[in-house]
Image 1 (cartoon, helix red, strand yellow):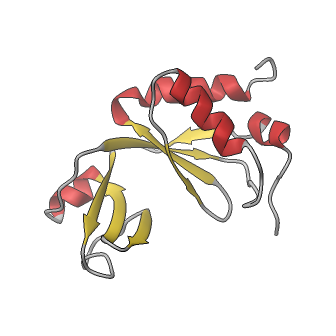
Image 2 (spheres, helix red, strand yellow):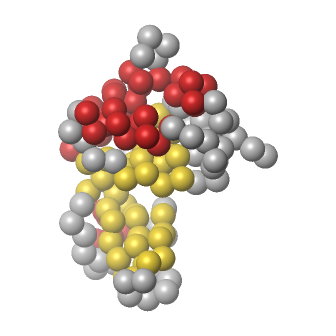
Length: 133
């Protein structure tokens, strides 16, 4: 099941969705998440395992973090080999002074932006998706 590749269709159909609550990035040296922890993203790196999870869950597990993010999912099924969506979204957010960490899932792209600017980031993405953009 392949996703959309046309950049204009991706932008117009992205339907950004903000997930509730703050999410944090943390890391462990183990090869797997600690018992009882269910991260929404994991990334294996030479230095350790990056975990993205709710702030509440990280605090319950005693895991430290420095960055609180809002999680926004672009609800269009983008093809993994689609060109330009990440660049277009990151460029718009960067122009507003907002950082953006992007994770591509099989079906959707997921953005992690500064938590305190979640509503602003969502408004920027919705404007980018509007036909007049």
